[in-house]
Image 1: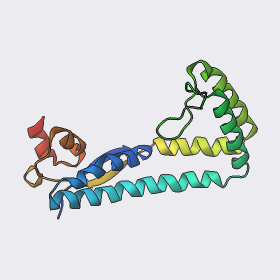
Image 2: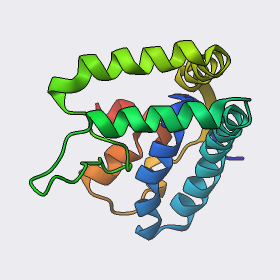
Image 3: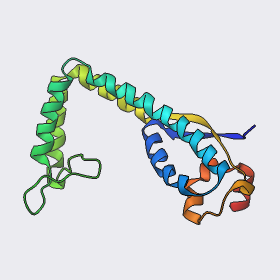
Image 4: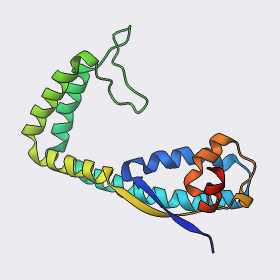
Length: 169
């Protein structure tokens, strides 16, 4: 039977942990791959629950209209590049110009006042996303670790047996 230990993660960070772990599948080692796969499944279930909760927000009456107005505000206060094109970050979200932040948030608050039911659900979703969940992750002993570098070891830190972590400290 594989050893497990408790791992705390915010619901909103589970997907990021999965994306961080995926490159480690290229590291040779049957035990490591098995444990990665099992732990990623557990983290994906947390992310799926978060996605399901967010998808329910889309079905709220007035959400589409709220989102259209929100996007208009985002576009109008976005930072622009040298060509005058709206800047977006790596996620595709609008980058709000620093000098426009106060006005941006004022306008978002006005929109939220017009859509109290949507705001209530979005606030509930945000609170849910920031909650920490405890997952029993499968761990791996030092003797089962293939040759990995320091950075790879840091990524796996939460999965390595506590006995081994005492040695590493």
